[in-house]
Length: 182
Length: 294
Image 1 (cartoon, rainbow over the protein chains, first blue to last red):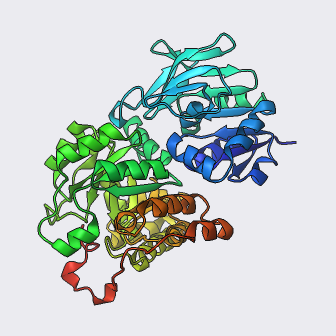
Image 2: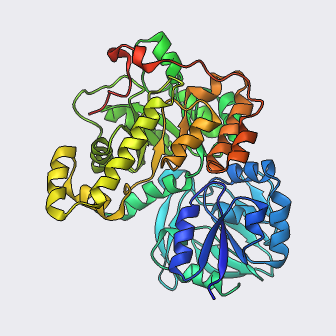
Image 3: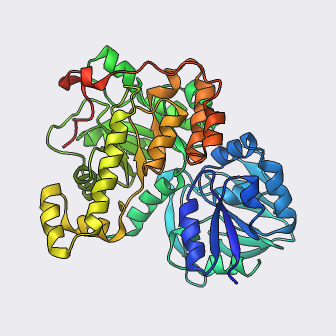
C-alpha cells in the first residue's frame, strides 16, 4: 500500500512537494486543517515564508497539534519548513517547533540575487532560494550533506530537514529517504 | 523552452510565494503591518494605485530611501515597480538588490513600444497580462512570473476576473489543437511557437500565474484563486480600507482557504469598510491602466 503523506498547504511551494511525493511513489494530500492532519502518516512542511505560515498556524490553532504530531510521526521541513522545525531561529528571532536540535539563521546567504543552484556530494542538486543556514546542530543530529562548511541536509530520529528545495528538481532521492522513515 | 539554472531560480522564488498575498506598501509602518498579518512579500511603491489615479501626474519608481528602509525592516521578500520599458530604473532596483521587479502598467510607461529585456537581468521580473498572448510575450522577454492586470486602484474585481478567465480559457483551447494548428495560433497570439507548444502540452503557463488589480475583499481573493490564480497581489485594497490590519489578515486567510466557504465566512466577518470602488465602464479610456503594455 502507498504511504499517505501530507504537505502543509498554508502557503508556499506545497504543490511542487505534492508532485515530488507522487513521483517518489507516495500518496500525497494537502493539509490545511487538524482533520487533514489526522489522516496522514508523515508530513512535509514546504518552502515559502515562515512568517506567513506561523501566522496561519496560530490563526487556525494548528501550532500545538502540529508539534504534537511531530512527537510520534515524521516531519520533513525544507527551507521555511526547516526553520519551523528548529530549536532556535535568528535574523530575526521567531517561534519554532523545536523538534530538531538545530539553530537556524534566516535568509543567511542574502537576498534573491544570492540564491543559487549547486551540486552536493553524491551528485544531489541543491536549489537554494533566500535560504537559511544551520549555524549549529546538537549531538543527536546526523548531518547528511553540507555546503560551504555548514549542514544543508540533516536528520534527527524520525525528522529531517533540508535548507534547499529537492521538490524543485526531478531527482526523487531526498523524498525517498524521507519516505523510508514512515 | 530553456529551463536553465537562472530561470529556475527566478521562478523558484515565485513558487515560494504561492498561496500567499503580496501587499502594496508605501512606508515602513505599512510593511510591518503587512508582514505581521502574514503577507508572503511586499511591493514597495510611492503611492498606491488609487492615489496615482486620483492625483495624476507621472508615476515613477519609488524613492530609493523608502525601498531601502523597507528592505532593512522586514524579513519577507521585497519587490519594487519599474516603469514599462525603463531598463535603467530596473538596473537601479537590481543594484539595490530588491528580490523581484514588477515592470508595471501602474506606473507611467517609459517606452510605448518596448518592454525591458528581462533575460539580461539576474533579478527576477513579474509582468502584468490581460490575455495569453500578452503573458507569453512577457515570458519570452524573460518574465519569471505573470500576474493578471485587472484594473489597479479600482477596488473592482471585474477586470481581474475577465483576465484570469481569458488566460485560463485560451490555455485550455490550446491543449486540444494539433501541431499545425498551433503554428496558426502562435501567429494569432503574437507569441513564440515554442511557448505556445509548451502551454499546449502542459495546460498551464511555464511560470507561476498570480492575480492583481481590483482585489478588495477576502472573497475577491478567493474568487480569482478558484478561477486559477496561484497567489494574489493586493494594492490599494488593504491600506485604503478602514481597518488595514484586520483586512490584511483576512485576505491572507482567504488565499489559503479559498475553497472553504466556512473559513471564508470567518475571514469576511468584522472587517470594517472596504476601499471605495469604481465602475470601470464609467472610466474614460485614457484613465485605464490595463491597456498600458504591448
